[in-house]
Length: 353
Length: 242
Image 1 (cartoon, chains in turn brown, yellow):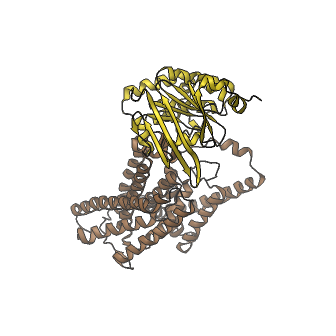
Image 2 (image 1 turned 60 degrees about the vertical axis):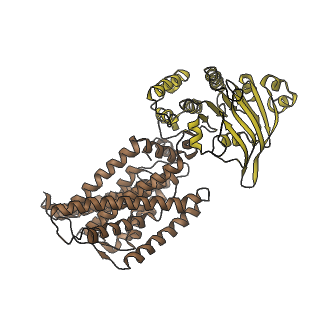
Image 3 (image 1 turned 90 degrees about the horizontal axis):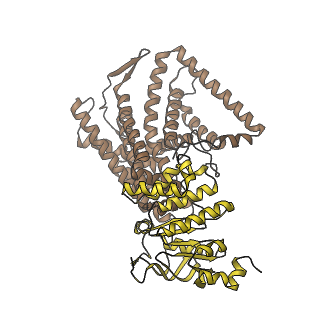
């Protein structure tokens, strides 16, 4: 759960000629990528900024979800495949709050809008936190001593169950969420307006991230989380209630997914039972890209994926286009797993992950 | 505490299994106030399992464990620490990505008396000046001997009423082994009873008051340390004599 890279020199000593080829290939690819971006920037700067703002906004939503994968992996070495579906339920809760509880339609006045956002955020975070902690208690804790494959299969099963619950609750089609975010501009850069709907996503994400960092680094509960992540038996020997710490971690991860669910529902304006499956896989890729188990890594990975997706789908000069987004994102997942399994910020461990 | 004639810890016929394999086949032992008690035995005899049964990391199948008059047989590990048993485990089990200072602070996790913690931190740094020099270094980057000091220091930070040490001399250079054993005696003289598991039987019997010899999950011998040192079977099996 921390950055750390002092083994680098030792690794470098053992580099083979193939790894030089890999480095060369990576450098060339990166150079081409940068050149492509620069050409796009020069050709149409205002368009480039528009796309960048979209990338930042997507990245913020991915970051909140990716952090949940990475928190849980850090403490249990379990990929919680149900996490994306908890995020989807967060979107459903938010949609219900906005449509049925606050009865808002598009472009409401500022007072009710802020009230709706704040209350929905609280409800989505609380509900998803509790759901995620309950999933751990019911589906993962009984398998704590089992081989690692068992909880992984259970996680996939939980994912389907949550999707079925969503279908039973809301039906199989998209729920449209009214456009309640204001679309006035916050500031203008290079002729491009940065609008309030995107800004609100960042306004909610950044304090949540800061609160999370503070929680993990400074609080007693955060210390317990870090200790449990590094050595569960040793943590118990320090007097840490390991089961409660794991529950707490799932609670926090679920709350982050709930916040992401609200932002997604507000910004993209629609939620469906399978929304979490797609976005979950992308966020998982982001967590792996940054270094699974590493919190700043998850945010960095999510921003990278957010920008990559936006540039790919939006830029005009020689971009592959949205048909290729999935292929590109999952190619990145494969490349990372093959060439740098520890991710951008992760550390090299004996197991290599 | 002089409950039960100064008995701090008592195990009564403790049986512990891993799956279908019975690792402890009825262990009974005692640690009294002020004592160093050593647990000897070859690999797989059940020494570490005995410690894990005491600190709650594994649950005994039957038998009783009583600590200072309170039954802790099935208590969860974190409560047993709060009751006053701290351990430096086999393989040290430090938190590798935390600094030495953070590791020591983790040892005092269940305490809230800041003054007392600062005092104990000073005491650990006096016992192990090397740790003070390295306090901002990540524990994973320490040498084996320094890690052992850190693990013992971390256990002391709990201000335990019973200290359990599992193989504190394992893999250490002789000069470090001397230093660790000197510290064990020093801590004991400051009033903490110690349950010491050791492969280095000669050193362990030198510092201990009493000892138990474990063989395949049973207590084969229990006696004063001095008499165990003279015992022919012990000399043959553990002190390298033929």
